[in-house]
Length: 342
Image (cartoon, rainbow, N blue to C red; front, side):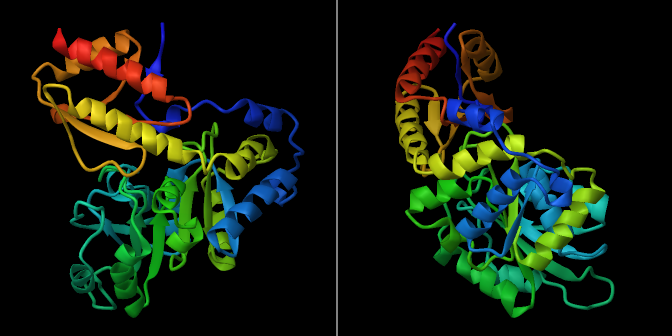
Protein backbone atom coordinates (compact mmCIF):
# COMPACT_ATOMS: atom_id res chain seq x y z
CA UNK A 1 0.00 0.00 0.00
CA UNK A 2 1.24 3.46 -0.85
CA UNK A 3 1.89 5.53 2.28
CA UNK A 4 1.92 9.33 2.40
CA UNK A 5 2.68 10.39 5.96
CA UNK A 6 1.63 14.00 6.52
CA UNK A 7 1.46 13.88 10.32
CA UNK A 8 4.78 15.62 10.92
CA UNK A 9 8.19 16.30 9.43
CA UNK A 10 9.53 14.22 12.32
CA UNK A 11 8.44 11.21 10.25
CA UNK A 12 11.28 11.74 7.78
CA UNK A 13 13.70 8.89 7.13
CA UNK A 14 17.45 9.56 6.98
CA UNK A 15 18.70 9.92 3.42
CA UNK A 16 21.10 7.41 1.84
CA UNK A 17 23.87 10.00 2.18
CA UNK A 18 23.12 10.32 5.89
CA UNK A 19 23.21 6.56 6.35
CA UNK A 20 26.60 6.35 4.63
CA UNK A 21 27.96 9.18 6.76
CA UNK A 22 26.67 7.52 9.92
CA UNK A 23 28.23 4.19 8.98
CA UNK A 24 31.66 5.71 8.42
CA UNK A 25 31.66 8.47 11.05
CA UNK A 26 34.85 9.08 13.01
CA UNK A 27 33.88 8.99 16.68
CA UNK A 28 35.27 9.54 20.15
CA UNK A 29 33.98 10.26 23.65
CA UNK A 30 31.72 13.30 23.33
CA UNK A 31 31.37 13.58 27.11
CA UNK A 32 35.09 14.29 27.17
CA UNK A 33 34.88 16.57 24.13
CA UNK A 34 36.73 13.98 22.04
CA UNK A 35 34.21 13.13 19.32
CA UNK A 36 35.50 14.90 16.19
CA UNK A 37 32.20 14.54 14.31
CA UNK A 38 30.17 16.06 17.12
CA UNK A 39 32.73 18.83 17.50
CA UNK A 40 32.50 19.61 13.79
CA UNK A 41 28.68 19.66 13.85
CA UNK A 42 28.63 21.99 16.85
CA UNK A 43 31.15 24.33 15.25
CA UNK A 44 29.17 24.38 12.00
CA UNK A 45 25.93 25.16 13.84
CA UNK A 46 27.46 27.97 15.89
CA UNK A 47 29.03 29.55 12.82
CA UNK A 48 25.84 29.33 10.75
CA UNK A 49 23.85 31.06 13.50
CA UNK A 50 26.53 33.61 14.35
CA UNK A 51 26.98 32.35 17.91
CA UNK A 52 30.07 31.56 19.95
CA UNK A 53 29.28 27.94 20.73
CA UNK A 54 26.78 25.11 20.37
CA UNK A 55 25.93 21.83 22.07
CA UNK A 56 24.42 18.73 20.45
CA UNK A 57 21.34 17.50 22.33
CA UNK A 58 18.83 14.73 21.85
CA UNK A 59 15.75 16.81 21.03
CA UNK A 60 14.35 20.29 20.55
CA UNK A 61 12.52 19.99 23.85
CA UNK A 62 15.80 19.28 25.60
CA UNK A 63 17.46 22.19 23.79
CA UNK A 64 14.74 24.57 24.95
CA UNK A 65 14.84 23.13 28.47
CA UNK A 66 18.57 23.49 29.03
CA UNK A 67 18.54 26.83 27.22
CA UNK A 68 16.13 28.10 29.84
CA UNK A 69 17.78 26.39 32.82
CA UNK A 70 21.23 27.66 31.86
CA UNK A 71 19.96 31.25 32.14
CA UNK A 72 17.29 31.12 34.88
CA UNK A 73 17.52 30.28 38.55
CA UNK A 74 14.86 28.56 40.63
CA UNK A 75 11.96 30.93 41.28
CA UNK A 76 12.73 33.16 38.27
CA UNK A 77 10.35 33.69 35.38
CA UNK A 78 10.22 33.06 31.62
CA UNK A 79 7.63 34.91 29.54
CA UNK A 80 6.45 33.43 26.24
CA UNK A 81 3.39 33.19 24.04
CA UNK A 82 0.37 31.23 25.19
CA UNK A 83 0.38 29.18 21.96
CA UNK A 84 4.13 28.55 21.98
CA UNK A 85 5.56 25.05 22.04
CA UNK A 86 7.62 25.85 25.14
CA UNK A 87 4.52 26.83 27.11
CA UNK A 88 2.02 24.30 25.74
CA UNK A 89 3.82 21.17 24.69
CA UNK A 90 7.00 20.53 26.66
CA UNK A 91 5.52 19.16 29.86
CA UNK A 92 6.39 22.26 31.92
CA UNK A 93 9.87 20.77 32.19
CA UNK A 94 11.52 24.02 33.22
CA UNK A 95 9.06 24.29 36.13
CA UNK A 96 9.26 20.64 37.13
CA UNK A 97 13.05 20.31 36.95
CA UNK A 98 14.26 23.85 37.50
CA UNK A 99 11.57 25.59 39.53
CA UNK A 100 11.23 28.20 36.78
CA UNK A 101 7.91 30.03 36.46
CA UNK A 102 6.47 29.88 32.92
CA UNK A 103 4.16 32.83 32.20
CA UNK A 104 2.18 33.30 29.00
CA UNK A 105 1.02 36.33 27.02
CA UNK A 106 -1.63 35.99 24.29
CA UNK A 107 -0.17 35.20 20.89
CA UNK A 108 -1.43 37.06 17.85
CA UNK A 109 -2.08 35.36 14.51
CA UNK A 110 1.62 35.53 13.65
CA UNK A 111 2.80 33.90 16.87
CA UNK A 112 4.02 37.15 18.41
CA UNK A 113 2.75 39.08 21.41
CA UNK A 114 2.37 42.76 22.20
CA UNK A 115 5.61 44.45 23.28
CA UNK A 116 3.71 46.95 25.43
CA UNK A 117 1.92 44.12 27.21
CA UNK A 118 5.27 42.42 27.74
CA UNK A 119 6.68 45.55 29.39
CA UNK A 120 3.82 45.61 31.90
CA UNK A 121 4.20 41.88 32.59
CA UNK A 122 7.91 42.00 33.43
CA UNK A 123 8.73 41.72 37.13
CA UNK A 124 11.97 43.24 38.32
CA UNK A 125 12.80 42.80 42.01
CA UNK A 126 9.37 43.39 43.56
CA UNK A 127 8.77 41.14 46.54
CA UNK A 128 5.93 38.71 46.04
CA UNK A 129 6.61 38.20 42.32
CA UNK A 130 9.05 35.96 40.48
CA UNK A 131 11.91 37.95 38.99
CA UNK A 132 11.60 37.89 35.19
CA UNK A 133 14.81 36.63 33.62
CA UNK A 134 14.09 35.52 30.05
CA UNK A 135 11.72 36.13 27.12
CA UNK A 136 10.98 33.32 24.64
CA UNK A 137 10.01 33.50 20.97
CA UNK A 138 9.31 30.79 18.38
CA UNK A 139 10.26 30.80 14.67
CA UNK A 140 8.67 29.30 12.65
CA UNK A 141 5.62 29.33 14.87
CA UNK A 142 4.08 25.87 14.93
CA UNK A 143 0.60 26.62 16.25
CA UNK A 144 0.18 29.69 14.07
CA UNK A 145 0.40 27.85 10.79
CA UNK A 146 4.17 27.70 10.50
CA UNK A 147 4.53 31.47 10.31
CA UNK A 148 8.03 32.61 9.35
CA UNK A 149 8.74 35.65 11.51
CA UNK A 150 11.07 38.38 10.27
CA UNK A 151 13.62 40.28 12.37
CA UNK A 152 11.51 43.45 12.05
CA UNK A 153 8.52 41.64 13.55
CA UNK A 154 10.54 40.37 16.50
CA UNK A 155 12.37 43.64 17.11
CA UNK A 156 9.80 45.38 19.40
CA UNK A 157 9.66 42.36 21.71
CA UNK A 158 13.43 41.99 21.82
CA UNK A 159 13.92 45.70 22.45
CA UNK A 160 11.42 45.57 25.33
CA UNK A 161 13.32 42.62 26.81
CA UNK A 162 16.70 44.26 26.38
CA UNK A 163 15.52 47.53 27.96
CA UNK A 164 14.88 45.56 31.15
CA UNK A 165 18.05 43.50 31.04
CA UNK A 166 16.38 40.22 30.06
CA UNK A 167 17.81 37.36 28.05
CA UNK A 168 16.10 36.22 24.84
CA UNK A 169 15.68 32.60 23.75
CA UNK A 170 14.34 31.55 20.36
CA UNK A 171 12.76 28.15 19.85
CA UNK A 172 13.88 27.68 16.26
CA UNK A 173 12.79 24.07 15.80
CA UNK A 174 12.09 24.92 12.15
CA UNK A 175 14.38 27.95 11.98
CA UNK A 176 15.79 27.04 8.57
CA UNK A 177 12.26 26.82 7.15
CA UNK A 178 11.85 30.44 8.23
CA UNK A 179 15.21 31.41 6.73
CA UNK A 180 14.34 29.84 3.37
CA UNK A 181 10.82 31.29 3.31
CA UNK A 182 12.06 34.79 4.15
CA UNK A 183 15.19 34.47 1.97
CA UNK A 184 17.15 35.64 5.00
CA UNK A 185 20.21 34.00 6.59
CA UNK A 186 19.34 32.09 9.75
CA UNK A 187 22.01 34.11 11.57
CA UNK A 188 20.09 37.30 10.81
CA UNK A 189 16.89 35.85 12.29
CA UNK A 190 18.61 35.10 15.61
CA UNK A 191 21.23 37.85 15.78
CA UNK A 192 19.66 39.40 18.90
CA UNK A 193 18.99 36.12 20.72
CA UNK A 194 21.16 34.92 23.59
CA UNK A 195 20.30 31.29 22.88
CA UNK A 196 18.50 29.47 20.08
CA UNK A 197 17.61 25.87 19.34
CA UNK A 198 17.00 24.21 16.00
CA UNK A 199 16.00 20.64 15.17
CA UNK A 200 17.86 18.31 12.85
CA UNK A 201 15.07 15.73 12.96
CA UNK A 202 12.27 17.71 11.30
CA UNK A 203 12.62 19.29 7.87
CA UNK A 204 16.34 18.61 7.79
CA UNK A 205 15.58 14.89 7.79
CA UNK A 206 17.95 13.51 10.43
CA UNK A 207 17.03 10.53 12.60
CA UNK A 208 17.58 12.37 15.89
CA UNK A 209 19.04 15.48 17.47
CA UNK A 210 18.97 19.24 17.89
CA UNK A 211 21.49 22.00 18.54
CA UNK A 212 21.44 24.69 21.20
CA UNK A 213 23.56 27.68 20.20
CA UNK A 214 24.56 30.76 22.17
CA UNK A 215 27.36 32.46 24.05
CA UNK A 216 30.28 30.40 25.29
CA UNK A 217 29.17 30.92 28.90
CA UNK A 218 25.54 29.92 28.24
CA UNK A 219 26.57 26.78 26.36
CA UNK A 220 29.05 25.80 29.07
CA UNK A 221 26.22 26.00 31.62
CA UNK A 222 23.92 24.14 29.23
CA UNK A 223 26.43 21.29 29.07
CA UNK A 224 26.25 21.06 32.85
CA UNK A 225 22.46 20.78 32.65
CA UNK A 226 22.73 18.18 29.88
CA UNK A 227 24.91 16.13 32.23
CA UNK A 228 22.46 16.55 35.12
CA UNK A 229 19.66 15.32 32.89
CA UNK A 230 21.61 12.17 32.08
CA UNK A 231 21.88 13.18 28.44
CA UNK A 232 25.63 13.60 27.98
CA UNK A 233 26.60 11.18 25.21
CA UNK A 234 29.61 9.13 24.25
CA UNK A 235 30.28 8.08 20.62
CA UNK A 236 27.43 10.26 19.38
CA UNK A 237 29.29 11.17 16.21
CA UNK A 238 27.35 8.31 14.63
CA UNK A 239 24.20 10.43 14.71
CA UNK A 240 25.94 13.80 14.51
CA UNK A 241 27.26 12.73 11.10
CA UNK A 242 23.73 12.90 9.72
CA UNK A 243 23.46 16.45 11.07
CA UNK A 244 26.53 17.52 9.12
CA UNK A 245 24.98 16.14 5.93
CA UNK A 246 21.79 18.03 6.74
CA UNK A 247 23.51 21.37 7.24
CA UNK A 248 25.50 20.89 4.05
CA UNK A 249 22.75 19.65 1.74
CA UNK A 250 19.23 19.75 3.19
CA UNK A 251 18.55 23.44 3.83
CA UNK A 252 17.94 24.79 0.33
CA UNK A 253 15.61 21.92 -0.51
CA UNK A 254 13.19 23.10 2.21
CA UNK A 255 11.81 25.40 -0.50
CA UNK A 256 10.39 22.28 -2.18
CA UNK A 257 8.47 21.44 1.00
CA UNK A 258 7.01 24.95 1.04
CA UNK A 259 5.87 24.66 -2.58
CA UNK A 260 4.31 21.27 -1.85
CA UNK A 261 2.57 22.67 1.22
CA UNK A 262 0.97 25.43 -0.83
CA UNK A 263 -0.01 22.87 -3.47
CA UNK A 264 -1.60 20.78 -0.74
CA UNK A 265 -3.40 23.77 0.78
CA UNK A 266 -4.77 24.88 -2.58
CA UNK A 267 -6.08 21.41 -3.27
CA UNK A 268 -7.63 20.98 0.15
CA UNK A 269 -9.29 24.38 -0.08
CA UNK A 270 -11.24 23.24 -3.14
CA UNK A 271 -12.77 20.24 -1.34
CA UNK A 272 -16.28 20.64 0.10
CA UNK A 273 -16.30 20.59 3.88
CA UNK A 274 -12.66 21.65 4.21
CA UNK A 275 -11.40 25.14 4.98
CA UNK A 276 -7.73 26.11 5.08
CA UNK A 277 -6.52 28.15 8.04
CA UNK A 278 -3.64 30.60 8.04
CA UNK A 279 -1.86 31.43 4.80
CA UNK A 280 0.80 28.81 4.15
CA UNK A 281 4.31 30.25 4.41
CA UNK A 282 6.37 27.17 5.14
CA UNK A 283 5.63 23.44 5.40
CA UNK A 284 2.68 23.38 7.81
CA UNK A 285 -0.94 23.29 6.62
CA UNK A 286 -3.80 23.63 9.10
CA UNK A 287 -7.34 22.84 7.96
CA UNK A 288 -10.78 22.68 9.51
CA UNK A 289 -12.81 19.61 8.56
CA UNK A 290 -16.42 20.64 9.07
CA UNK A 291 -17.80 17.15 9.52
CA UNK A 292 -19.09 15.48 12.69
CA UNK A 293 -17.40 12.25 11.59
CA UNK A 294 -13.96 13.86 11.13
CA UNK A 295 -12.22 11.38 13.44
CA UNK A 296 -13.71 8.45 11.53
CA UNK A 297 -12.62 10.01 8.23
CA UNK A 298 -9.07 10.35 9.55
CA UNK A 299 -9.15 6.68 10.57
CA UNK A 300 -10.29 5.63 7.09
CA UNK A 301 -7.58 7.74 5.51
CA UNK A 302 -5.01 6.00 7.67
CA UNK A 303 -6.30 2.63 6.46
CA UNK A 304 -5.80 3.90 2.89
CA UNK A 305 -2.24 5.04 3.56
CA UNK A 306 -2.85 8.77 4.01
CA UNK A 307 -1.77 9.74 7.50
CA UNK A 308 -2.90 13.12 8.80
CA UNK A 309 -2.57 14.92 12.12
CA UNK A 310 -6.21 14.97 13.19
CA UNK A 311 -6.87 16.98 16.33
CA UNK A 312 -9.84 17.81 18.51
CA UNK A 313 -12.53 20.03 17.06
CA UNK A 314 -11.98 18.99 13.46
CA UNK A 315 -8.61 20.71 13.16
CA UNK A 316 -6.06 18.79 11.13
CA UNK A 317 -2.36 19.57 10.69
CA UNK A 318 -0.65 18.29 7.57
CA UNK A 319 3.10 18.66 7.13
CA UNK A 320 5.22 18.32 4.00
CA UNK A 321 8.79 17.10 4.19
CA UNK A 322 11.61 15.34 2.35
CA UNK A 323 9.64 12.10 2.03
CA UNK A 324 6.58 13.76 0.46
CA UNK A 325 6.87 14.54 -3.26
CA UNK A 326 4.58 16.69 -5.39
CA UNK A 327 3.16 13.44 -6.79
CA UNK A 328 2.50 12.26 -3.24
CA UNK A 329 0.59 15.50 -2.61
CA UNK A 330 -1.59 14.95 -5.67
CA UNK A 331 -2.24 11.35 -4.66
CA UNK A 332 -3.12 12.35 -1.09
CA UNK A 333 -5.56 14.97 -2.37
CA UNK A 334 -7.30 12.37 -4.53
CA UNK A 335 -7.68 9.97 -1.61
CA UNK A 336 -8.82 12.69 0.81
CA UNK A 337 -11.42 14.01 -1.64
CA UNK A 338 -12.80 10.56 -2.47
CA UNK A 339 -12.93 9.56 1.19
CA UNK A 340 -14.79 12.71 2.17
CA UNK A 341 -17.21 12.20 -0.73
CA UNK A 342 -18.16 8.78 0.62
